[in-house]
Image 1 (cartoon, one colour):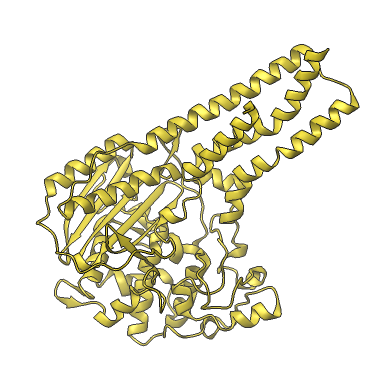
Image 2: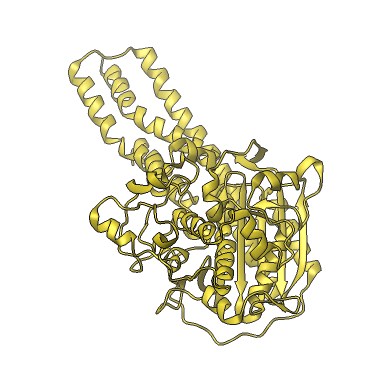
Length: 498
């Protein structure tokens, strides 16, 4: 194996193995083939001391700057903890607001179901009935399909808008500028296939505003925050910051570093820009697990809760309304997670046990996802009386590997550059053509490392680095090394011949 091939394989392994493409990890993966189990027992009494020790051990070994956890059992928030330093040096608690990224969809779906239950709108309303000036699709057939999109399609990600629309880039893709949406294609007819995109919930939020005549922040408070006494649930980041929003961090080769938050377009708020505390999300979970009841009063009818948490008709698993539905350890689980620059969130519910967990962290990186998910599932293991096993700092090992790989690529590049300057640059046209030809062949590797995720998620390379700074830096260095390796190899070989 040549050094160049080894470098390419290492880079490919980094991109795929470290979680640079973390769609499934965010809690909205495709159907799980496992069969539905029998209803399990509700579990033993909650061992708060054991869970507390587990959370603190995870936070220490995983290098999480701040984390808040809530555990739901038997229809109530039975345990909470916060670790780390928050705003203005105050300690992080279960009441500290975090940005909850794509977990926002579960809260937005709940608000939409509340509106449907009260008759303000219907799930089978067409989107164009609420937003008549909206233009979607790039062909006459697609525009005809767009007229069929319903709110139910949006909630289940079955609108046909199967594009990973970003809300970090300029808002030409976003519902803040309806006339600009005419360039967004529909990949399929609504209702036929699953296609996860933030645009679905952005459009849903606009339809909810049109139906109520109120801004999204107001209807969220009235329909969700007020009934659940969720005092740290916000649709406006500025207000969350005034109430002590946990400061954002990102990993730079293993070290969590605080940074100024990125400006994200507010029209994507329903899809991924809500802020909430672990306790408030625990109350959402407790209400859903309690059949729509919270503190002995009905927030949502049980039938509406069943509709909210059911996957698309004829499917046992898949995506419900704001929740991924599957099986974990042989039993049904509802889950969703997500990432923003500086934040990570994950929530899982076990309906048959009336048990759930919320994990919020003020750091983001694809290689931090294993820590977040492992902590949540380990808490569920303890809560159900099982042994979660040892805490393995996979993400620290991965970040160390990223650093070594980056340094190795830089060293490889510097080595060839040094030989080139010592031996002189070749002037032969033949050698120049061969060098350009080999360099062109190696363009495929940088396209995979940088172009792959940017195409997949619809974000620019600079935005991708903002989301994943350590992996982004490694990908850029690897790409530069791969591009420069071919001509440098040829130049130095010609020098050797001379």
